[in-house]
Image (cartoon, rainbow, N blue to C red):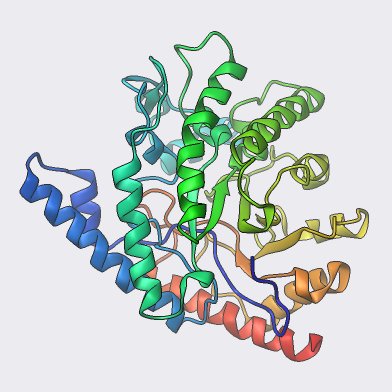
Length: 378
């Protein structure tokens, strides 16, 4: 895991807008080897293009933009056995308080479904994962080297948040089954020389989506279990080769039911990954930098706070971004801060709350903000 030893480094959370033609291919796969070959070829060229574009915008630590995935979480059901059913999709409780807005944002709740676990879970995604790794390695080789690359993977907790269990006798056994299966993906990414990013929105978003009626103490207990399961799955990967993403849901909603960072940060810090990406730019969580005034960040941890919002089309001023960076650097040390984004810019293929052109302008502003912060910190 690179640190900001000479200047503030920049990165992002993972998903980026897929080209329109690729979205159509991902959402409407056709049967037959020809269609499979065409899709694989388009994914490969899209990865090449997205890595180059990230570099042009000044990003230091880059990925494949999740070009091969329809969703950062549900893609896992294509790589795991046991998901042959469906169930109602989870729904954020903050939207229940504003039903008209909820319908405008996500449509009719009763019509939304997600895959459900109806049988034994095992990993079957080796071939698809291998292609993803090869595509990213090839793109990195042409413009930077693998030490700058990361690859995202869904955590057991976020899979269980979106995909209901209808097979295993308890939530605990379900999550451990997910962990044992997804471990194959995590280990393969590490062995390929890439930094692994595990996406863990369940540690925050789970509060108002999966457990809205639980007490804070009950939710904290569930979060503790999720960290135990995650550490079980990551046990063979050095902590400094893993980063994790924490978020409260990548949508422009009220978010007034979000759990406070101060109420989960102690649990999050028990997870193995050395770097933590978290929302720190949007209006609901931008104030929470003060949490790090009151805790001693473990020496092996790195913070990657969001410095740009991923749900609005405002382009943040570089000066604001520099201020956000220096706040954290003053608290935990400049070498332990990397500038990031709140969340992905296209968590679901084809859904882009921020115009793709504006995304790149935001990244350019972040790179400029990191330059300004570096001038002040060094």
